[in-house]
Image 1: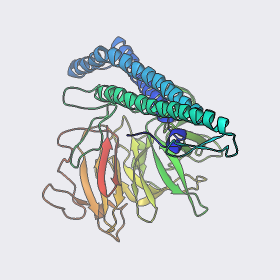
Image 2: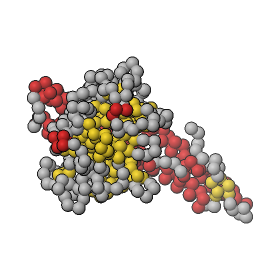
Image 3: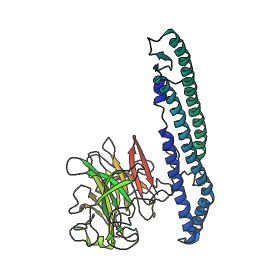
Image 4: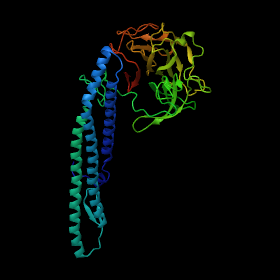
Amino acid sequence: MGDPTRAQIEQWRTDQLGAAAKNWGEVADHVEFILNAAKDAIKSPIGKGQFLDKFKETAEAVIAKTPHQIERLRAAKTAAETSEADLKNAKNSAVSAINDAEGDDFTVNQDLSLTDRKTNASLVERAFRKITKFVHEGIIGLRARALVGVDNRIAAELHKIAAEVSGFRIGGPDGTTVLTGGPLPRGESRNLGPIAGTNAPPISGIKGTDLGEIIEIPDGKGGKKLVAIFGDSFSEDRLGGNHYKSVAVEVKGFDEQGKPIWGDVLTGYDGEQGRAPLFPTTGLPADVTKGPNTLPAGSIVMNNGDVYTMVAATKDLHPDGGTWFTKANGDFSNGWPPIGSSYQTAEASPISQVSGYQAKDGTTYIAANGFDRGQGVAMYRVPDGVDVTDRKNWQPWTGNGWGNSGQVATHDVSQGQRFGEISMREVQGTPVISGF
């Protein structure tokens, strides 16, 4: 660009460099956390056979490549901090030159030319002020161009650094990406690496939580609120203390890093007096006792704002006690009671997890699998106007089209991959499945 205007100089942004430095520092901290976790895991591995061999191979690959990348990220942070200081100095120097001219009774115009405000000066003084004006204009011009030069230099340097850092992958040679990746093309999948369950902010009264999901539910006052629902959780940071078979926790919002700001624990632990559990089993068949844990098993979001949550009564992650649906709402006084007609035994339905949404045309689309990774992901749809919690209304995707209502899906849309937790939502008009 040519010489900037006065307004551009005075409004020149430097804060984005500080934000970049902060971001690179946080990424470095996260990668270092992964590195330390991999080192700890190697010391005390879990499993045996091929699983253990693959685990060690993956952990050793992480250990081998991350220290150098952490150094690069820290260097990128330092470079951004130094660049921010350089740019601030260049901006301050240009602004100071403008202020000096204004202090000598010259008006600095937007094109950086000067207008003398002393119109009644003597002939000698006017001659002197012409020289002063020339000097001020020269200094302002030099510092304005210096500001542009510093900005261009920084942009080139940080662009190169960003390109190097953004290419960093903890995943394997297939291109699985941990830190970056850009927009996901239609039909493509991407492995985001070990991002779940680390560095989570604490919940008051609960130190150990299972995996969970944040859902938006009616608040009972005509509005909405966010609630996180977790599987079995404990008051201690281990398997100990008060045990919540499932628990709902208020989410007040998110901090600048996107992490939840926790509110109250809304449901009771097992055996607690005065607070109901999240998922009471009253009214369900006796088979439900075969699964001692009642775990949240995904949600289906409807166009009218209703949210239906599947519950699985599990033993060792198998839905031995069956599955059913509840309707999520803001009243936790009695928990979320089961929709009785939705109950299925483990023999009748091997599904122990779902996620779905209602599309604009009223059709509800559901992805279904099992917690224990014993089955692939299957797809179902439910026509508009029928009960989505009754699996007799579900139509499976066969690979060639949609099957009949009540038919069990046999087509594996995950193509042999096995996932535990899954989520399917419509994002910008496109269905997106995520899971691990």
